[in-house]
Length: 280
Image (tube, rainbow, N blue to C red):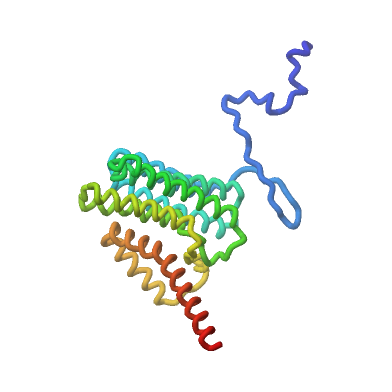
């Protein structure tokens, strides 16, 4: 046999004659004190992450085409799916390193790039360099926020987030456009300047050291007081009546809760130090 045509000694990858060869994902995990190889990816949580990524991409397209109502709904859907994928993974014990990285990349598109482009398409483009600078500040802060979250994972108090979460930040920036589009507000120079300041400020909140309650202590498998369930029903009814305004208000209140609590704690600390000095 001609040695030039003998492929029996070639690696398997060289013998792959498929039209589109794709490597099988493989990661090493610890199980019973041993490191084992696991191939493939978990379908359900990563499918939810893919849905969030698709919604974010759709929001970009809708915003660039001037359909800001559809862009707002798409960001809302992306946020819901982003909240579900992690919980589903934990509830079904299907967490993986691949899923964590995929989730971060999807978040960057849906809650970093998409809101920056939506708000730029609506109002900030009229400000020229100042407009795209505000959009870039927001987008870069979203990237820094996600990178910091990844490296601090497992080392910080799970009850709190350090810095404003990117889905809430995206909601705050996008829902301003959402509400304005609903009431047909024309983005004049004054509106554009205020929007630019809000966009940049929201980005800075993401990389701040303010602590935000994470709500991760709420377990869906456990029981809750009856009044909590009743309040949830009332909240859903209120949101259903005026989703644009209520969701924007919720994002704004939550975003301001971090600085408000931080300032209040500093005030208490300063007051205690003053009282200690007076007693001494």
